[in-house]
Length: 318
Image: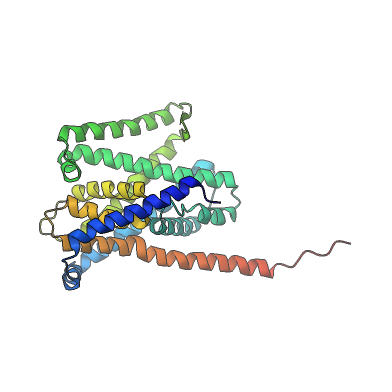
């Protein structure tokens, strides 16, 4: 039976999609399909290749999340298996929504076949989620300090508040590294529980976490036109804000949330060009991986079904 909290978050996700799509419609209903097609065709071929490479980098970093979590547990699993499991997990979760499908089932089916216990798989799931959160905090802190005026694009606040917020985020990261280095006791706040891994594991988290976000934002960066381009740091900052809002809203694939945020935060770029860049992002980062993940899941389950049917039945007991 579904939990009340899960049902509530599902309704929140649906409401976020409806509101975002309504706001998006008000902004883009005058844009024709020909204009949108023209913006997509205007993207240079080299930029399509760069966007594709950024997508591979993003999913490679996500696979590194799992690799680091398994290293934390002292488990050895092949890179190829980890890459397939991670790719399938995130491709499904990004599209279906974290409130509906967190990827736990995929990881359980995959890693249990490698001998991991349900408790160990649970640690992998939490560890990967924390690595992503750590990367968001680190990247967000750097962007807020490096581009203090960026916050004006999202909300009207003074730049010094941006620097203050960024410094606070980097302080949290520093405390986490310090806790690992000095072997602090686990930190608990309500249901939130943080243990400090080995320093080598933490160092890898600090690389893998931001790398995924940097590559994902680069897909949009390469897809925007050169005219009035705000620069990579601005695109990264807007991406972090919009992606965080999408996750908080539990909207599947951040539907509508990403578009509304980017259009509002990049007023110097024509709306049709922003939409074209986000279409490229959705195709490369969401839709194509989603289609491939369905094939991977189907193949995995079919192979396991064949193995079970080939096993001889247990002999009858006398």
